[in-house]
Structures are given as C-alpha cells and as structure tokens.
Amino acid sequence: MTQRIGIMGGTFDPIHIGHLVTAQEVYERFDLDKVIFMVAGKHPLKQRHVTPAGQRLEMVEIAIRDNPHFEASDYEVKRKKVTYTVDTLRHLHNVYPEDVEFYFITGADALFEIIEWKDAHELAEMTILVGATRPGYTIEQAQQRHEHAEEKFDIRYLEVPALAVSSTDVRHRVEQGRDVRYLVTDGVADYIRAHNLYTGK
Ligand code: NAP
Image (tube, rainbow, N blue to C red; front, side, top):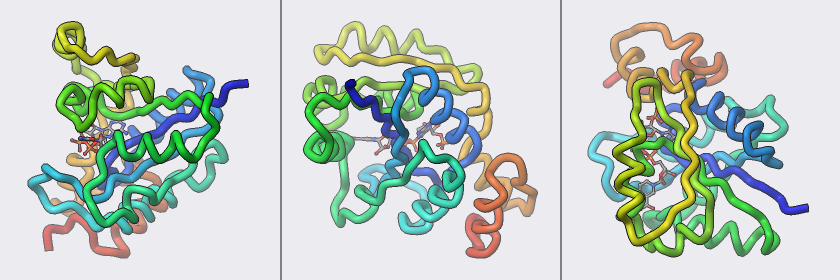
C-alpha cells in the first residue's frame, strides 16, 4: 500500500490551534499515515524578528505531543543555510520509499507565490499541495494564476475555519499583555510565558 505523508510547512511563530486543526483535517481528508511538522529554519525574505528556530521547534513538539499521528522534524532548523521547500522534498524522497506520496500543507497565501519558489517545476512533480485557507480568503485569484502558469501544480484548497486564529494575532495579544488561552495549547502558552516571548522587550 502506498504511504501518504503530510508535510506541514510553516514558521510556526508560534504554533496555534489553527495549525493543529488544519493538520488533523488534512490527515483525515486525505487518509494520511502521518503528518510531519516541518519547522522552517532561516528565511530569505522575512522582515520582522523571528523567534529562534530551536524555540519554535520546541513549541511545536509541546503542541503535538499527545497526537500519535503527528511528528516534528528538525531537518530545516538544523541546516545552517536557507532551506527551500524543494530541498526538503528532495531529502524526504531520499529517506522514504520511492512510492510515498507527499502532501505539502501550508497557507494558501504562501502557495500563491509558489510559481516563484526555487525549482518550482521540480516541486510540482514531487508533491501534492494543500492550501489551507482562512475564512474570507477567496481562491479565484490563486486559481487563475496557476491556470496560466507553465508549471502544473496539483493544489487542493481546504477551508479551515479555525484559521481565523493567526500567529500574528497571538504575538500581538502577548505584546499587549492579553491572554492567549484557547488560541494556543496550554503547554505552548506556558512556554511563551516562561521564555518571555513576544513581549516586545
Ligand atoms: P508565511 O509567509 O509566514 O505565512 C503565510 C500565511 O500562511 C500566513 O497567513 C500563515 O499564517 C499561513 N501559514 C503558514 N504556514 C501554515 C500552515 N502550515 N498551515 C496553515 N497556514 C499556514 O509563510 P511561512 O510560514 O514563511 O512559509 C510557509 C511554508 O512555505 C514554509 O514551509 C516555508 O519554508 C515554505 N516556503 C518556501 C519557499 C521556497 O521554497 N522558496 C518560499 C516561501 C515559503 P500563520 O502566521 O498563522 O501561520
């Protein structure tokens, strides 16, 4: 039987319940064997300050620890240089048997740019893409863009109401001294507090 593995790619600064619901939804919808949370390491374009990768990874590990179908990978975090998604998928294709099907899951707005990502043509052959959309996000623009693109990506869009939560909102709330209970897991909320993250200090 062909294995189907989800790769949940993101910065996760921090991981919140929207990410967890998305991963679980994709796990069930596509009958996956497991979902690997691939925490992004160095980012070529991010303007804002990003929490050190080791801490983002620890929060992911805490958030997923009670789900036997989820695991976290330190592959991108451990690499010293910028990692592109195509590098990660090449690595995964080397590690797993040849017939494994990968489902790369991320925000639909990130996937909007995918045509410009490194070695996009190769990426299109290596993975099915799942674009998780927030409430209010319309996919028409993205669909049109991909219709006219040379690279033919297999993209499945999935609306996830729980993505009304965002990492940006969680960070802002902490900075304003507000409670992030119910937006992140209790373990992640404790971690944010213990490490004094997002306070702006
Ligand atoms: P981002 O620009 O920080 O996020 C874009 C949007 O997608 C945000 O609204 C974000 O919401 C949401 N999002 C991010 N990850 C998500 C996930 N797994 N599930 C649902 N929503 C998600 O994007 P990013 O986190 O830096 O990058 C996303 C993925 O694309 C990463 O794996 C990254 O390595 C990859 N990427 C690759 C390239 C390349 O190869 N050239 C370029 C860019 C990105 P939240 O802030 O709430 O998460």
